Length: 348
Ligand code: FAD
Ligand code: NAP
Image (tube, rainbow, N blue to C red):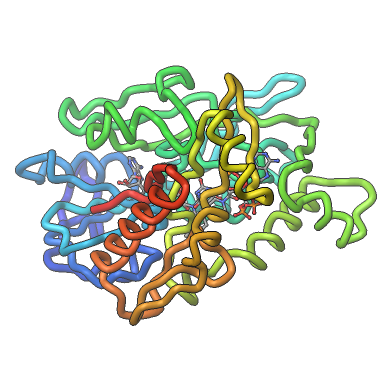
């Protein structure tokens, strides 16, 4: 606890040797050498100022896209910066700025409640707003980049706030500059999204359309789409509160059309989605299921029995067990299909 600018900051000191079990959705029980929580920018700057080597900082939001394979001998900073505000509007759009510590789904609910379209397909993605640009979160044919205006990020070495537009973020499929060239250099503190006052619904992806039919929806609303996405997700994906997981463990691989055609001759049911320039996206979950891994279990770790793309912790798994399992799966898929899988989850 320390006093800055006449204000009393509660709970902003670094704590030592804290279990991270409740701070990662895999539920891996490792400890952090130091753990701090920032509710506002003053606290963030003050906490960082105390870190002797800033390369040792590790920011966490909801911990829903990390696999912790050992005790974290670092300064783990929980980003809890709040606030949602409308910063601009014109006839057709509104610009909404949200603090990095806001729960992503709360921002989705806020937009739906106000009648603003653009992120309803991204309903129920776990985690916080600040991590959304990290891998350009996406689901059901929508990605963050589709509605992204800008973000603010704190440079941990210069201790300055920088603004990044869409092009600066170099968004790709589950990718951004913050996962690559600028890794470990910035803490994202807020994002601003450009949402539409006249929603255009995107329901052709996956099972949304059939779910809307099942719900007997005739005139689609933002709420309907969100509800449909939530229903599909709940029926297919394991709830981290029940079984530890970090969602899709691997990215969907993209392969040349020629290779896809060859594989298709052998595996006629293999799904493929044509992207530009003769490239085809393959469902990694299908490959893993075909290779016989779906429902695999060894002790407390394994592959989910309804969604083969999700690796799970049934209770007392170690992060290193799950990492080893992911390596075995990658080797197997390479041998069987000549396709190199890439992990989506961030490994520490
Ligand atoms: P964390 O796990 O806390 O962090 C992820 C990475 O970002 C870490 O490297 C961390 O250091 C870094 N980071 C976090 N916050 C910041 C910050 N403020 N500044 C700088 N770096 C930061 N993802 C999708 O894209 N689509 C989905 O449909 C989807 N579904 C999921 C379903 C389930 C059941 C689960 C468990 C996960 C799913 N995910 C999905 C993955 C995950 O929810 C998202 O990637 C989410 O954005 C991670 O947010 P988080 O706050 O939990 O990030
Ligand atoms: P699904 O509908 O069973 O489809 C399997 C895969 O095929 C998906 O991964 C998706 O790729 C792709 N796909 C389906 N329809 C497509 C289309 N019309 N055009 C192009 N690609 C298509 O997938 P699911 O497992 O239930 O997941 C549904 C959505 O939620 C997907 O978008 C998925 O990415 C997202 N999700 C992500 C995570 C995560 O942790 N990253 C976890 C759960 C769900 P894409 O993944 O490229 O969309």
